[in-house]
Image (cartoon, rainbow, N blue to C red; front, side, top):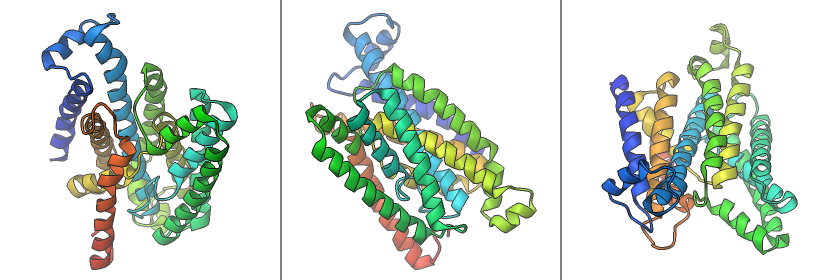
Length: 329
């Protein structure tokens, strides 16, 4: 069954990306889309809309959604806490803070913002792990994330106060999350980052399975928990840092998608990680398509839509935990 799911995710992903590239202020028919694909060098008409506007946005959205979903799955496995996604434990806020500092203090140079967001994600992740302690209980991690998010929000608020009009506009963009105005340049940066991070996580997939039993049993099985955590931290920082730099804050993907996938394919990370990547990518691509059609000609920030979807799911998980006493049940 799992193998069949993996097989069908590829054509479903392709279909979702094609569908998302058809909708927008200038809707395209499937026939016009295929014609535009064959006219890659044409800088006018439907070809320009598809190649310069829609496709880079769709591809980048897929990579970002997949990366955020995989990050959530890996962190949940690392700390054995199903609520520990990059947003809830403050990693996203840390990346956002450093990106905002880069915008206000160093200008809106894309690579500078990306590097700053990556550094912020790394520092925040290690800080949360240090505050939560060796066992990383879920309550402590969430509290640490709340503290870090509150601090980051205060600093970003101060930056909003001192920013000029252009910087304020850029900060607003990052805060709400959006895939507008992206190009193949961002895709060219994001793709190798995603491949590197996926490679790091795939190397520790079996070790993450062992960590679900606890650090003691994992060590008896030959797993080095510290080394595994470091790889997960670096991979998560890569995903979250670059995603925040290019698209701002897109919440709840790392929480919602792994739970959906775990319910279908189980908790083994050799299945959970790749399926989460594809489902997360499809989710963001479709959400971005919806943001372009629900309030034309304006676009609703994608972070708002994912929060509307993710918040009720989070409430459901908390109610489920109250009934069963364990979110994994």
